[in-house]
Structure formats: structure tokens, C-alpha cells
Length: 540
Image (cartoon, rainbow, N blue to C red; front, top):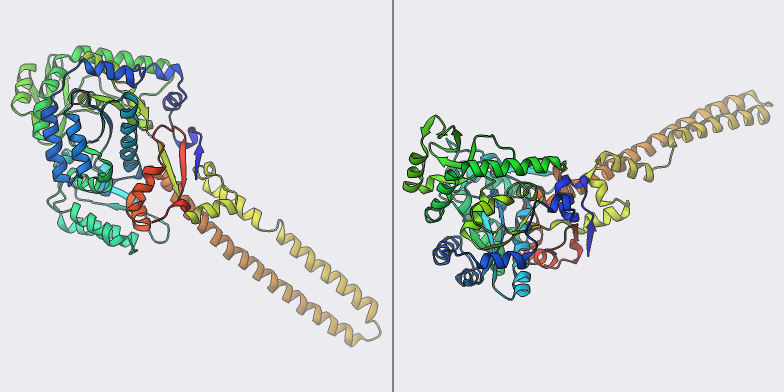
């Protein structure tokens, strides 16, 4: 069973992304590719060094421990008619948030679909963004512990200087063991964790980098589907990309004008700019005493406090291409420079910044991909589905103020104005008892005194009863509150969609590796609504 939630602001989506999903001309104007057939025709007119790129893919995926299905797809890529379906993400700790595996499985499904549609090979490729240097983005992840509380798991030993994640090793062995220990402590031991922890221990070692560890984990999880993993932080890839890097330097004025014009156009349509760059940004980085942006100053270029002429910088790239890398805006263009990219699936942030770069492809003689929104999913466990049904809690409610949900549920489950009702009960008992004493016991003053004492005992008992009722309500309220908060943590943890926060190991520890196949079966790679998948249908 899958519920579809209409995309909206409540899910944290931007205006340009929502209009993109609706097919509004105001947003689609920035994505000129008319369809995959149109892109495929354009790609047929271009040439690619398929043999060299396939050799890189074979070497990288062999190191990751890829499957025969993956190598079969790499072999297909050598065919000049073969095209690629792409997605990408940073090499986040322990596989990162759930959206990463969702993107990976969705691109596999999309590749198979488009291969049938075009009657030619289309292979799925996952670009591991190993050139990125933001350690704080990749060094942590989140799981739910055995009490249903979100737990941040992190590796807290950064490199001495900012480095691409492809070069950052888990060299602090004590910190790495502490990090893996924190994950295991949070998840506990289940029927499925022995295999899971063995995979984690084999992938994440002191001599592994963020990229190699991530690659080994992803190869194990997606191997049966033939996903190709690719890391641009590879000397052979850099040599292939060197002419592209020098072309960026050569076309600085044109590049700046195209980006500025596009950004102004986007803002005139009332949309925000997902990526803001300084006017003198070259859209290149250089790994020189750490990964640093290359900035332009008149006719020269600056890397930190070092100044280069264009010829000097081009020579530096020619001699050491492994030092160079694109920024976020040029990465998709490099992707299409190296591969025949038919389509790219992206999330809300990606679609927003891809709108800024589409005219750049033509500037470099390339064909822009057909952009599609990646699927978005939440996996609803059976106990939480039951709780939502019991209290009539809608998914959308969980994306708002959770205390309003708690208050609504508690108000519905507890009699209204109970305190005033108790007060009236005690008052009525006191009045009626007093009337009874006055009317019936006037013949014996001693009995009247005894009756007054009995009323005191009854009133005391009523007060005790009231205290027990409210204590019970308080206890049940806490239980209900805790259950609702556990639901909230599972569905909308840390005020964000589950896929953006929870790590896949949470589900693997509870449901085993068969959960990945279940995910693949349930994902609709073309659906733009948010898909809520009910896990009551899952069978290990």
C-alpha cells in the first residue's frame, strides 16, 4: 500500500521546484530539453572516450566489490549507442540519509524504463561527489535508537586542511571505532545486525577514504541491480577532464555572462537562486594546500594568496590535473563532458540549482540532460500506521507543530472539563448530604454530628478518587505523548522528511538486507508526489 502526498510548501519545497513538478512554463523554461528522445538525438552527434571511461569504471567498481550485473552494464557503455541515466550525492557516513539509496534505486529503474522506450542501452550511474570538501556535510548521519529517539552518529576528526572527501581517510582509528560503536549501540542487536555490522566493519577501515568506504557499502546494497558507481576524484579521470578545466578558464567572460543573465531571468520570475556565487568566481577549485576556490582578479587568477596568469594556471592544470575540480555549478557539465548523459534525476535543491546552469551546456558544445525529479518516499512501519489510524493523524499533520497533534489527541481521549465536573459532584454531594442531615436527623443531635463526620470522609474519598483519575490521565497522557513523539521522530525526524534524515542502517537492522529489494519494488521512479510506503506488506 502506498499513499501519495501532494507536494507542497509543508514538505519544505521551493517555488521553482513546485512549479517544475506542475510543468509550469515559468519554471520549465529553464529546462529546455523537450524529452529523452530529443536528448538522445543530440548525444548521437557527440563522441566520448568510452574505452578509457569504461576502464576507469571497471577499476573503481572492482575496488568497491561490484557485482557481475554492474560489470555487464559497464561493458554496455562501450557501445556507441549506449547512454547514461545519472544521479549523484556526497559520500556521506554509513551511506548517509535514506534519500541516497532511494536515488540510486530510482535511477536503476529509470535506466531500464528508458532503455525499453528508446530500444537502446541505458545504464545507471551514481556520481559519488568525491571532489566536495565540506567535511561537516558528510561526517555524520542519524538513526533511531531502541527507544525511538533520533541519535546523531558522527566521525569527529577532520583533516588538517580542507580536502576533497575522496582524499579524507578514517585515519583516526580510535575515533572510527567510537563512531561504529555508537551506531551499534543505538541500533542494538537483532536477527539482521550481524551481517550489517560485518559490512560496516569491512567497508569502514582506517585506510579507507569517505569515498572508498561509501563505494563498498553502496556496491553491496545495490549490486544486484547493476548500479555503476563513479568517483571523479581519480587521477585518470582528471587527465580526461583537463581540457574541460582549461576551457573553463578560456571562457570566463562568456561563462560569467551566461550565468548572470540566467540568474537575472530566474529572479525576474520570482524564484530564489539556489546557488549564490561571487562575481569573480571561476567555478573551479584547486587542491593547493587544501581545496581552495580559484578566483579571478582582472586578467589574473588567485588561489589563496597565490597569483597566476591564465597561461600559468593552464600549465599548472596540464601538469597536475588531479589538483583541479569543478564547483557545484560546473559539476553537471563535467558529467556530460565525460559521459553521454541522457537524464539526471535530482531532488528539490538540485532541480533549483540546475535551472541556473542549463545554458552552459551549449557554451561547451554539449547537450543538456533531460532533468527529472527524483522520487521522494517515507517508509511507515506497522506500529506507526496503527497509531496514525487509531488517532486519525494525517501525514501532513506531522510536518507541522507536533504539540498541536499531541493536544488534539489528548483532548479527544479525555473528558472535557473533568475538573469542573468533579467540583460540581463534590458540591452536589455536600448539598444533598446537608439537606438529608437537616431533614432526617433533627431528632438526634448525636447522629447529626456523626453524619457530618461521614460527609467529611466521603468528601476525602472523592478527592482521592479525583487525584487517581488525574494521575491516571497524566500517566496515559505521557504514554500517548511519547508514542506520538516516537511516530514523529520516525516520520519527520529533526523537522525534516524521513528520507533527508534517517540512515538506511536503521531499516536494515530491523528488516534485513531484503529491505533494499522491497524498496526497489515499491519505488515509482516517475512519481512526483511524496510516496508513503506501508511496511506492513514487507516480508523478510
